[in-house]
Image 1 (cartoon, rainbow, N blue to C red):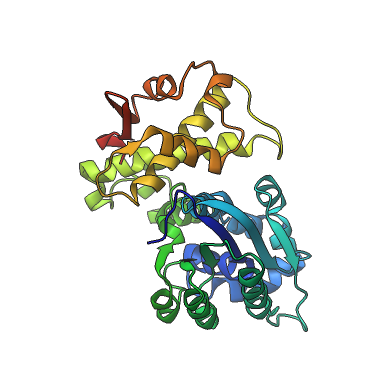
Image 2: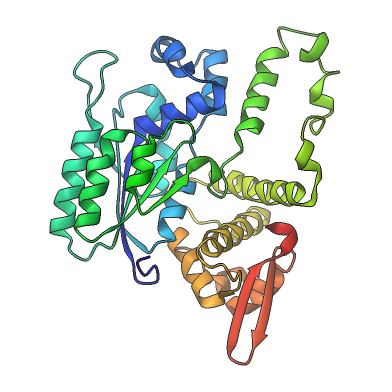
Length: 343
């Protein structure tokens, strides 16, 4: 695998592809095709608005994952940004400094040609920016297989990100590494998102049987099965911490830093958890140099500064998060990892 300490990364998002695929993943196959006209005509209709909220893509989770391979040199998203569904992502995209490429479809409901434009731009960038080491393709179409193969022939490490169930096997095979969007740190599990949406949709319509309040809503773990074991509980705690951090981050306007208060504490803890999780994915030992963790946190949030939070050193900051991070100091080496109950 290419060096991630000094890696230089280009990220290309086929935004329509990932948004539509996630919508179908949350609400069921072909759900977007059935809802497309209603979304285009009136996305603020209560039922449609709720379905859209339940299937929101976490752009930050994708970009944070990409940053684990090195410094992000460029990040581009391709879509028809005049579409109301895509315009809702303005805050997420602006806060992450994503370059937006506008693609108008040639006809109503026609493909916008993102695959061709994205591929042309990516190949041009590889010749123009010869120091690029990694190319991250966020899409699921087999149309991107030739691009992945060309990037590899040109000496780049190719990483794919796609939605489970909507990604072509050929694209997965063409990449050096492939990650399911569903499994990225901070992404809400499909059953939780779908159940929440279904519960909200059903409550006004039903008051009896399985749809009523006396059903599964009162016993969220009734069908969990394996969720009763320690690993399931740990995953839930980690997901809850990341969800809380995401909520705190979303409460801040793009470009504004969280300086103090409870929101800052929640957000920075979530940042640490996500950085550790991403970094440990690339190191089987589990233990990481604290300097590498700090570097990853700054890649994800350049405004991070432990001194601004009142700590003399990064080690002091880690010690204050002993409930989620375990610190080991041996001589001049400082190693850190997620605590067992947080993994």
